Image (cartoon, rainbow, N blue to C red; front, side, top):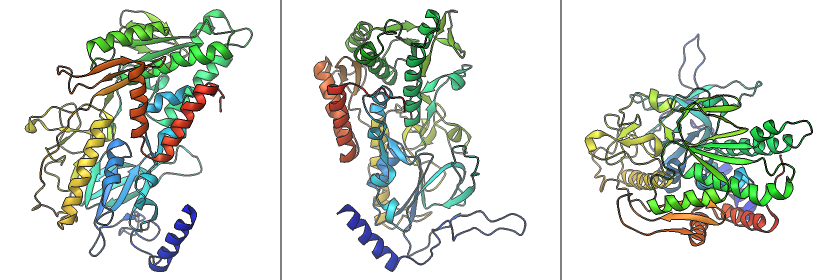
Length: 487
């Protein structure tokens, strides 16, 4: 039935839309001189064509916006270095085989089907490398993943409305060696790298001739950063060790250890009682908690500020995020902390038709509002709000470039925190439903919280397809254990 619908849709399009249009990269090029070749791209829209919304990024904010945008009003063009959205709350589970990687990756075409079949909507695997706000253009460069047979090329996209949702990058605090030797946990390929290295170290440590000292180093997993990501990964890793390594790698089971390094208290945004519970539970699971600051990262060890050397075989870095190089270099107003500054309606002031949402944006000081935390629920809520706002502007005829100036925008964006959750392994989790650290509210821990955690995230997975994958993976892992194949 699905294939028949697609065939019917394609037949209809070929009958009515097959003529070359200025939206095709093969047919459209901007005017060039006799020396330099023209730069291909998407030119400005003209009535009666639909106005174009260009979205930079495919994270929580950008995908929620694309899901909510009315494609009968706008054409949607997404520019991103990945063609999927990552369901980050479950990413740590893929590192040890609790979930398969496809379970946490949602293709952009499923989030916004118009990108797959509408003649004016596209997805481009590329990075935005420049912005010309005066001419309503973004300059992009394709992603080739280092393939020697394919050189990246540049192109331009004209926009009527531009939404910058390019996210943030992991903070290294300028510490030497982090980028070269540590693995971040923000993308699917990070989780794949962690899994391959973890299993490789397990197998190498079992080879005859490896000294005990080298075994302990290879099997020492160090996690830097005691936020929710670091704690959840440590919990998943301790579960993997207790339930799988002890059964399938009995020769080295006494050598593998997990160390979690945090400069302050772990899970600092959670209720104090929950933090104590998490500390106790992680310690029971064999996770060693170290309070300290990393000063230097070397190929086989890290050096703490007190001079302590910590050898490692696997180093996972999870210390928060900061503005990306693109955000730092772009010529737009900045909020405190270096994010793109926005007003109460998520607009970038003094630059018509540009909006910013998600981890790359923050309120300007003139709004009197604090910068919102870099959380998935913040980004998702901003994307939903902005989709409704753009739909309103489009319905009132302001969707084209330099339009919408007279549109009544309505209520500004208001964020209400719904609470925080984190798993700590051994079928235990934390649920903190307070709106802020100082507010009163429900906070629980234990097996009940773990059940709530799994149920909540299962319902938040974007598609029914991936919900099915997640549920089956959880059931398979519970019955048969984790898959430890190094593929």
